[in-house]
Image (cartoon, rainbow, N blue to C red; front, side):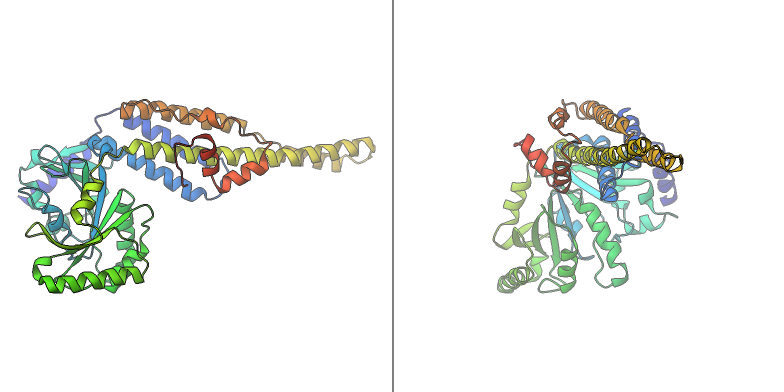
Length: 432
C-alpha cells in the first residue's frame, strides 16, 4: 500500500503544473534579470541576487496557493521534541499533524483556515490535493513514510498547505522542523533550515517542552541567538504545562523571563500552555491568545515584494550611473592627453595608439543596460499586476532625477538606499 501511495504521489507531483501561464513568464523575466546582473559591477552582488531569488520563490509560493497572499504567517520553532505539531494541532479540529519528522526530511506545512484540503505544492508551482489520492493522507505523512523514499522528497515537494477549520481567519502557522540539541554536528544545517522558514514568516513562536526541562535550555538560547529575528516578534511558549503544578510554573516563568532579559533577547511574552488541554495556564507580559489576535490580520505580501524590488532596481541603476560617471571622467582626461600629444607633433605613433586603446576601454558603453533595467521592471510590473489581480505601479519615474553627474550623491545613496526612497515617498519605509 505504501509503495502504491509513494508512486502515485511522485507521479502527480512531477506532472502537476501551475494553473496560471504567468509562471512561465515569471521564470523568463527572472532568468533575464540574472543574465542582466552578470553585466553589472555591483557591490554585494551575491546578497542582492539571493534576495532576488527569494522574491521569485515568494511569488511562486503565492501562485501555488493564492490564499497565502493575505495571511499573516507565524513560524513555530523549537527543539526536536518540544511539541510543535501538537501545539498547532490544538488550534484545529479533528486533525493532528505528523510528529517525529527530522529537520533534514521535514516538509514545511502551512496551516490556515479554509476548506478541508491537504495541498502539496511542487517545485514548479503546481499543486496536488493529497485528499484526492487518499482521504487520510495526513495520517500517513510520517517520518517513516518520508524515509521510505529513495531520495529526499523535498527535491520535488516544496511545501504542504493544510486548510481546515481554524479559529484565526487571517493567521497561518508554519510547522517548522525542530533542531536536535543532542546532535551538534548538524547544528548549522538545522539553523539554516529554520532560517529558511523564518524568512517566510511575519512572526515567530518558540516552544520549550516542559517534560524535558524546567527552564529554557542553553542550547535553545544558542539557537535563538543564531537566528535573524529582525522585524520578527518573538513569543515563547512553555509547552506541556499540564505536567507541572501552578506553583512550579510560576517559578519557571520567572526564571525564563530573567534568562531572556540577561541574554538581551527581546520577546513579546511567555506563555505556559497545555496542548493536550488546549489551554493557557499562566503567562508573563502578554497572553498567547492576545499575541495570536494581534497577528490575526491581513498582510498583503505584494506590498513587501514591490518594496524589495524597488530597492533592487535602485541598487543596479545607481551602480550603472556611478560606473558611467567614473569612466567618463577618465575618458575625458585620456582624450585631453591624446590631443596634447598630437599638438606636440610627436614622431612616434606608439604612445598615441596606446592612449586610444586605453580610451576605448574607459568609454562607457552600457547605456543599453540602463534601458534594459527599465524594460525588465516594466514587464515585471505588468506581470505582477496580472498575477495579483491588482494595479501595481513601481512609479520608477520618481527616480528620474538621478544622474551620473551627481556621483557623490549616488555613492551616498548606494550606501543607504532608504535616503532616496524616503526623499521621494514618505509613505513607504525601506530597510535594504
